[in-house]
Image 1 (cartoon, rainbow, N blue to C red):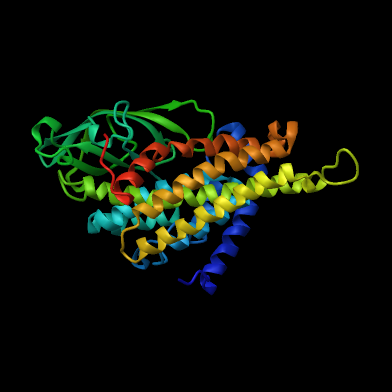
Image 2: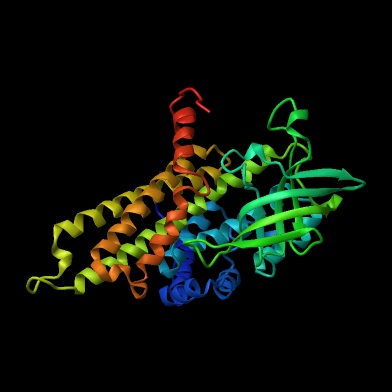
Length: 390
């Protein structure tokens, strides 16, 4: 297995690093305080061609793969954004781009994909419901047939970047669960306009990732047009999983970048800080070892994530690798960023040192987009061959 990067990949990392540092920690601190969306940086990312790196050239993409996307996200997040920026890649090239490129109509590919890639429009995905989180098959939002289209009714929760999105990928039932033989039957995906009759949303106040808002979304007899169907009517469950699995790779890449950023800030501080004499505190093994441990763990997570991306790009099964990488990355981020804060002592609690934002933001990814417990379930069943317990 060759871990060496190509010249093109190295150039992408160099460009992503430059953009990440241009919109560095001070930029993100201001956005976090105001709760503002990173529109300016996202447009710079799109202008560099990074939104479409894994999408087809015929629609304005680069025609590369998830490995390149992972490398780009790592570099951008390390530059100053931390893990939050990875959400923008989930929303646009994954939820919007992958769903349309693989399952959308020719018209969607022709008209919508180029605008996602250029940054002209943003996307969001409405899946989670108050009574359907990890257990996505329990979704109750229902699309009832109405002429050549449908009428949508229901509620979604924790939907990211709704105010900034023009398009929403909605997952709904088109058959009542009690009317199906298999619980996976009757799930359908639609791509609708956010600004539409019967769609409303309400912000959720939250502790971290404040630059990417989360909302409750309500559908009240919302019209859905016949040409807004994505994939197979009643048969969208496997297609949805195909879209969701790639978000693990992007999530892990963001966590890798966040840990490297936090460790870099901690080491810079420790190299300058002197107490009890003339030696920098970075020479104390009590501070060195936890940071070294976090570095080792996040490097392992990154390598496993790259393996998952390579397998995906080759059209092979990658779920185990993607889930294991996300599990270790989220745990390494929780511990590593915490230890970076501890290295700074009281100053680590100050907003001006930036680590507290990384700490708040990374906490989300221990239970999203998939919880540690469900990853361990997956590993137990699919990797170890143990009995299903739920």
